[in-house]
Length: 463
Image 1 (spheres, helix red, strand yellow):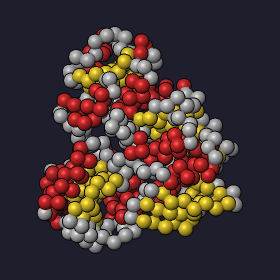
Image 2 (cartoon, helix red, strand yellow):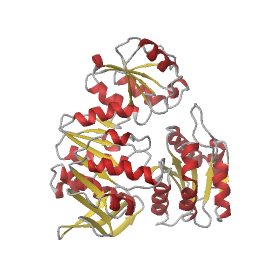
Image 3 (cartoon, one colour):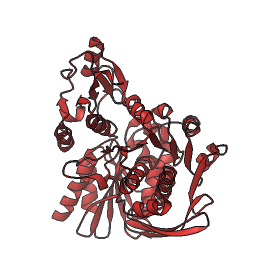
Image 4 (spheres, helix red, strand yellow):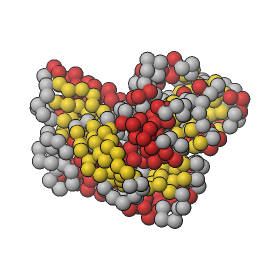
């Protein structure tokens, strides 16, 4: 997909598009792009970082697509009616999706390591990248989240890492079926659960991904994953308090860390992660297994992963004011939300949750499972406020809404409130907060949630 090494990314500010742009730029491409968020004035700092990297930005009005030899790459959220796409089609520009371009880079690398699963992809990708970097492997990594360990004044939005080593570590997406494009040497499979697609579709996609790999690292503690991998010959399994090649036992949770004993090959190792939660123990086992498969000595992988400090918006402590802690979290599907609530309820304190769904379609698909997951974990006194789903334009069917979810939850005894306006929902939670509470901002697709979480800390400090 060289095409003169000039490309234009439509939707360049997206969580999957921005790191792709940074990798292409670092590899010598002339990169330009547009984004609705840029036109709407959202998250200006992100676009400043792209400009600082030498990437030209244009309004999403077709003005940036100027030559027939520009490769035009569009994110999944971009419709054919967008002006940039209309101009690209008129000029006859070559076209690619984000997934096609990423898969091309990934498959051409010497050691492609793909991380799949409906939960934990970004964290495991970040952990593997950090282990390989810390042990001198100089990897390239493509992540859907900012990796805090690689943030610097020159790279404030470090969702990509560009190295000269053999490894290309990337999370791969099942939501649009593009996981089928990737041919990993090492495939990591965290879990298979409902998110964007039916379980039957997910089994086919994940099963094919694993079958194409030279070596698979898989979660034996997840029944769906274990069933998929029964016949794979070259396999490393992991499990938290289960039977596997890498097993975590004797978990010792802390509010923002967790310790455990890892047992493998008859030997035991004590591990203390700098990120919290049982789910991160599982993520660490996956990352250790993949790193060892990539040639890292086991003890080096363990000691490196202990220093990993996490990702932005993954159980990220934003701040504390007047005894109230504010946490920013990417939880948006039943498993992710369950992991966050379980981690929080391991310690005392009421939860005040603002959950903004990441679209109307996912609400329709996940309705029952989402309600079950939240209802099972909300404690007396906890409050859930749900604004309307994230919406950035385009055609969408609004069959299931936030109001439907909160109504379902109230029948289960949950204090769930539909407050359509997000700012009003946030203000309500700040007004209700008292010392010892934890406020959690949850949701995906919308970078401004982090800004909202920071504003809530500031308002709490004023009370």
